[in-house]
Structures are given as structure tokens and as C-alpha cells.
Length: 298
Image 1 (cartoon, one colour):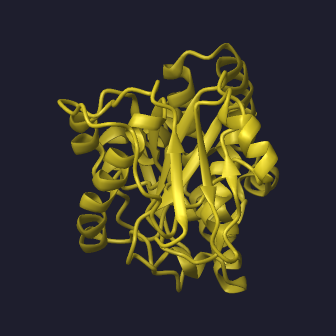
Image 2: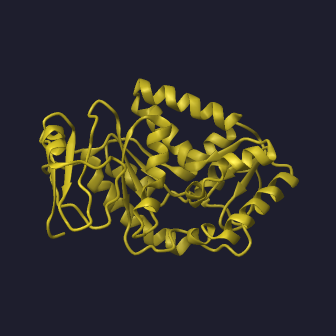
């Protein structure tokens, strides 16, 4: 990308299995970040003490930098392509605020409807692997922010750092809170990654009427139908609601679902953030994760 460059500290070793390439690269278009905006002076200061610094000197591009090298850094991969930085950053911001870690969010290309069936899952998987390989030398763990966990096992075989998928992590968290898991998804066929973990505890599945992909959730009718779908799960006897689409995190509906129905509601993005930060072993992350799990149960 013309005019964009990235500087990385040479102290950061590569974490790609069998790879010894220098940890430098050219920044790619579409990068999203939750790390903040800085002035050239702040960049210079940050470069002397932080794990890595990104400077983007293009038109409307912000200059961003990693501000706290003592905190764990998470690479978060989105499978929804969007030009809206707020939408791209919303999952990373949620993880950062919940667990006290730094987050770099990257989005795959050419997936404007995200992942909503097997075909889009298969399209996304190699793109997720490519982003994970790019991120791995510069972060402590990787989170795939999609409930179908595209590319999860392949990424784990590729890198030497912890990798967590939102679907399997969300399902595991739901099992810790109940035995009749109601799955709120994009279709009445739950993501395979979710179904595998839940097994016989998968009690029922509901999807908002008229919603076929993530972007549909962000419409007024999508929000309305989401609440109706959750109500059907409650009527069918679920004792936990699992948000098995990370687009529901973008909507921010979990708190309202808990208020309306009095059940634990598992946000798959926060469940993945909890699992990953616990693996990273940061005392701050462990404390934040414990608080989030308590909220899920409440």
C-alpha cells in the first residue's frame, strides 16, 4: 500500500512453525486496529519502549501504535469485509475492554456477507490462515472471531502460539453454565464447530426470521427478529442462550437478552477472549476473565 509502512522491533521472534523470516512486513489495506491514535512524537516515544509500532501516513489513515508492551497482545481475525472501521473494530474493542489486553483486528478480503454457510466458510478458511501467519510473529495469541471457526485447526498447526475460535469457545462456556443450550444462530443449522462441542446438550436452535447473513442483523427488523428468536429458545426450555453468530456481538444484545429472560447468555466473542487470555497467563487477564465469567452466569 503506497505510503503505508510498518516498523517492528527486531526482538520479536517469528512464531510461525518452521519459519525464521525477519518479523517485518508491509501493512495491508483493510487493517483495523483498537490500539489508539498517535502523533509523530508519540510514535517516536513508543518506538523506544513498545513491542511494535505501526505508522500509516496515507490520506485518512490514522497513525496507530501498540502502547503497552507489558500487556498481552491478541491478534483478532474478522471474517466480515467492511470499509467501516467502527464495525471492524467492535469485537477487538469488546475483548480489550473486558480483559485488559491489547488487540489488533484484521479482516479478510472479499467476504462482504461474512460466513453464513459452508461455502462462505470454505472461502474464508485460507484467508484466515494467511492473516494468522501474518499476525503470529507480532502477537501472543490469535482469536478467530467467527462462530464457525474457519481455519481453526489449520492455524493451530501453523503457529506456535495459542489460537482460539469463537464457536468452540462459546459452546464450551455455555456447557459450564447449563445443560440445555439454546443456540441463537443465523440458521436453524448450528455452526458445526458449535454442534461438535455441545453434543447432546444442544437443546434447540433458533434463527431470526428474514436474516441470512451478518449484515442483516444490523437492521431494525434484524434486531426485532433476534429478540423473538431468543424468546422461542426460552419457550422451548433452554437454560442457557449461546450467541452462535459473532454478528450478535456487533449488535450488543447480550445484556438485554439477560435482562428480558433471566438466563445466562454467552457471547461467543467474549468467551473466546476469556479462553485465550487465560491461556496467555497474564494476571490482569485472569482477573478480568473471572469477572466476565461471573457476569455470564448472572
